[in-house]
Image 1 (cartoon, rainbow, N blue to C red):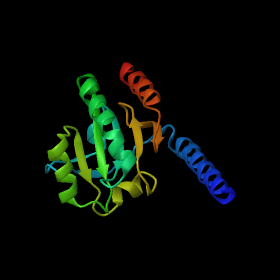
Image 2: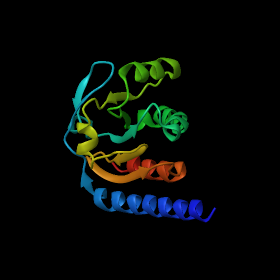
Image 3: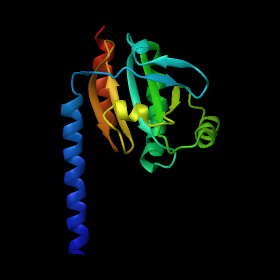
Image 4: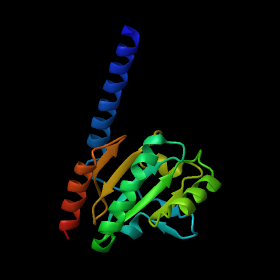
Length: 167
């Protein structure tokens, strides 16, 4: 029992340290210049999305937390897209295109979905290795906040609305 508690504490401390490092390292950094290929065949770069507030969300089809967050991701995109908000969901390299496409068809995701087939996108964003991890980027291409794991959606909405309010 004590071992499990100690392990839980160690995992919690590592997660908190990871969140602090991500928020410190990526705070006020420019989004990396990356070429993206959506699963519907479009090619674009992170630079092409300047002028929009964009969330780059790293997720995986086998990630329980990611799947629990997707309804909120869908709702936020639907609510804010007409205000200049874009969502780019980056599926990790271990995901199969078939699994990604099945989810898109079953759940009707309307935001942009990218498959990071070779892991280069995750590497460019600070070597993302676990999911979910999301980066909120302002209209000028600056990373204004990162969200790790099962983040507080109210904090996300607050940061998003603040970013959308600034032209």
